[in-house]
Length: 87
Image (tube, rainbow, N blue to C red):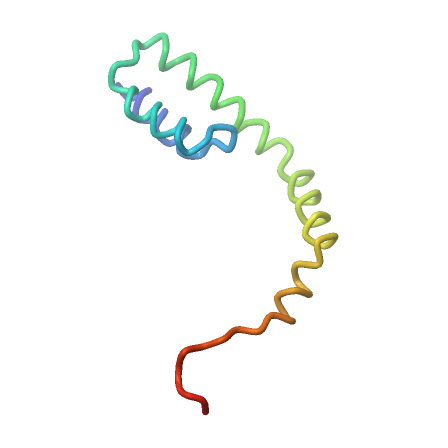
């Protein structure tokens, strides 16, 4: 049963699974055999290992995309319309 408890964290942390897939797996998890739980756990552990091993590269690519989209500049130019009283 401890493997199934650990598997919950791996399912929730997965970036490959959709929200719907995560919910389905979490619903079905109690009925998994030990073999099924180990197989899914191995797969999701590999996903987390890949993310950890390539963290710097992933973050560098994310930063590049962020800069190319000029998101920081857009945020400083945004105008927000409020519903409160004018000052």
